[in-house]
Image (cartoon, rainbow over all chains, first blue to last red; front, top):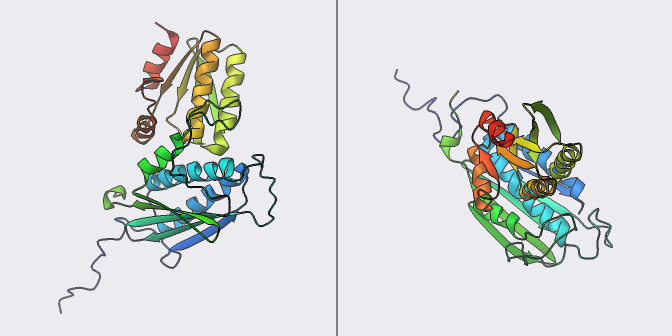
Length: 176
Length: 113
């Protein structure tokens, strides 16, 4: 008896087998407070998720870079009157980062309750956060727009929401 | 920020490892500033062990460049992956720094021969 379709590989699946691939864990999320020292928690989440979902290293690096820019921006500019360690009036102040992986597509959503703040609008060039930093505004968002395939912002119910999309081409999975 | 520091042929070679992002950029800049204040004037930063560098890391490099310039020193970068070079290009940084393809080229240029 000829075995015609059983065992035929899904062309969208990674080229190499991985014992770590977990089909059920296609979404994850974490909530951090508006402090710069919390950003490493998001890096850890991305790395864990990336390993579980077998997402290529180059894609994870691009996502981590984009998230670093976005989160740094939110913490540094989104809560005027705070110092950068995030002493904030509202006890519920927080930033939620969600990740979702579908075949060929990685999506991140960053939601926060800071002031209405669209990171896609150009920052004034002379905006400096601290005396140590050279006055180059807007560099970070340029990276986000260059590294991600889609970037979208909206504001609803007092919350900013930024959505990043990165396509995962099959060629980024290395045959081993 | 994990970083190796070697002295070779009069050149201080710094080898940061990992992510030069918001968390890593401060320690990165501080360690380099320590080297410059301790007398390093020919500085090569070899980035081959770096996963990626964000705008925070670019700022740290600019701060380092400015500091060594104030000490009449020279800063060279090497070991830049295509992915990191892409980020440099996006930021218009490819002509701001002296960039060499290999560590050996970097040592030679940093030495100033």
